[in-house]
Length: 87
Image 1 (cartoon, rainbow, N blue to C red):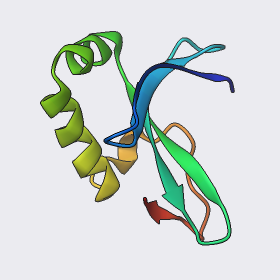
Image 2 (image 1 turned 60 degrees about the vertical axis):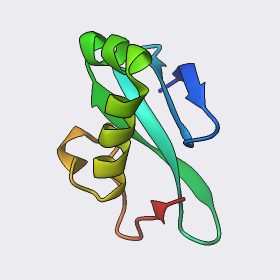
Image 3 (image 1 turned 30 degrees about the horizontal axis):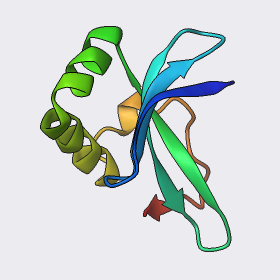
């Protein structure tokens, strides 16, 4: 998988983009398991991507829910048993 960020919010610590091979849009944010940091990628559709580009508050609401693990059904890559916590 090759994730290409098209939007990055350094302040809010999340990004959005398109996975190059599948064309799947995503929203991602960093997580940590202490010894290593990585990103969790959540599937969104193109309309949602475009909406979030125009409405940062809506994107932040999604990020908040995902950080609370309320949107795990949208994870593109399922985490292992030692799952990190949002940074």
